[in-house]
Image 1 (cartoon, one colour):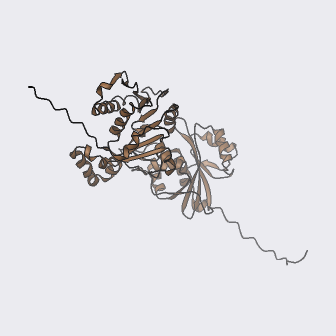
Image 2 (image 1 turned 45 degrees about the horizontal axis):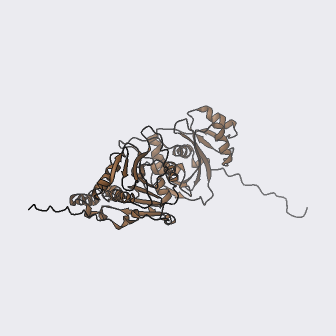
Image 3 (image 1 turned 45 degrees about the vertical axis):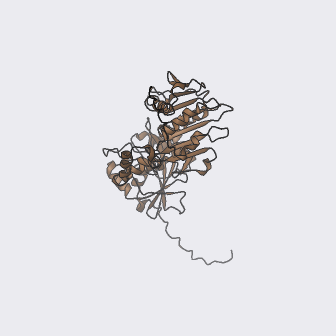
Length: 424
């Protein structure tokens, strides 16, 4: 009598409860699902399990897996879905047709595309899809690219879901942080339409090799910065290795300045912008306000914008003079106080700026001056990257003026009349 072979024991996945919202499938559920955190947290695999299960839904879902570009989709996301199907023991229910995995039982599909192709063309249509999973969402270039995806998910009568998988990075300039977080913490105003699911390897130890867990834990002491930024993957509210640090950010300037000058840097094409910075001096501090930073601006438009922003016609404006005719045109446009800025070796000038007490006046922290201050740094070889235009304009204004000589001169005291006061 032949021996009976034992059936393989079913695989057990210890799911972190924080990921339970990924399995929601009902009308009036949140639209957005942020699954974010560090390495080894299991978020990508759990999302793939939830996605496969979603293909059995009574709502007949179609799911689109996206990344910033198409080439990387085939290597990881596709494999995650195949692994999830095998883990659930559902290999016989699915077939592969080109770049799609089809559930033969329900007809639901899982497709894979890039938001941008390798040639740079954008994703054209998401018609018929009810669920989008964006892997490495931090790589999506802009809110505009995300919005095109978001607005494409609009099937009537079905639950709609957009799942964002990512390891948080530098918060500054990230549309993910700007739209959903405040100083690295979920914005309570988004709780009505968003489920936030943060996790780390500490939440997923049972599903990881013990040696991997030990390696991660050792990094907490051997490489603490790397541990926080990459293993725990918390939002970084600052950028390391910046050229400028320890400036203050004010919503407004309270005191009356001792004097005011302006710095002006011209955009000469490419990614350069024309930037104008108002610089108020008071008791050893420089209060800097960005008036405008505009790309591809003509001189006539610069003149008009300076007038609209209230720059006095006789104001001292220290400007870049690489193209002298620009200064001449602005002078003819009514600004008699425009003059050449002082220029020296950049490294020397940077040290001078670093010694100044500088305050950025920016209530919303949305100016290019603030963005440049927070992000401008040297590359790995210590070489300076292109100086942000607003920072250059600020530098021209501060280093070209002199607090001792630019203070308005006090007039001579008026002599009292010897005529007696009385009735006329």
